[in-house]
Length: 305
Image (cartoon, rainbow, N blue to C red):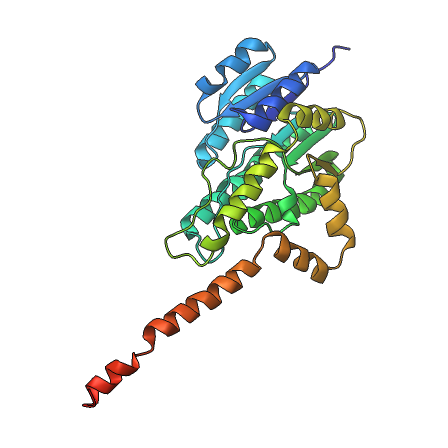
């Protein structure tokens, strides 16, 4: 009996985690169908690995997703072994300062496009001996990292969707696996922190920026992360959740065992939110001082000058 070629469709392969996942799957003999907005960005990748092929994908375009499904079905003969939803976007703004249009874009890429991809590729995954849907999630599904509430919410939504999808697809022999990602070096923070002039959060902006960039700098190297993830995904039996990346297991322990009141206290101190209370008091004090009339001025206007 001729062994069927294994295929893995991976979104967001232009750089970072996506690139390394493609390389690691290819190294294990899997034919990788790598996507990016512009396939020219994947030329170096495809030229180095004969079993990595490039496909265009614009996640915000429903037609692009459908065209990808059609192209993959033709290329693979109608089956798919791995669907790896890696592509994502980031938006760093507080709940008070965010622009709703930008939050919608985050959910479109991080949640709704994933739902559509899963929906369209499930028929191909069912034709595999053991199809697997892999969602690249984040520890921020559990940790309310300040200054990125829309991103956190999108990862929490993705996680709950993944849990539900896992149950719904169990009768059809399709595994649904969430990779709960800790700190990994990437360029996802390249847009920086959004803060309009006059934002109440400006007193801690530099602190949060330093914290985020330091976490990224000290994160797990993308190649190490991808090798570990792919090794687990290629096993006959794997866990429904794979926690990977720097601090992932520490965070798993903390959110799993500490009470919510204690976690909130730790978060409050970690993000130095007390500085905002002090800044607010100073602002009120300054406003009061400027609004209090000078005694001499009152005297002059009263005719006592």
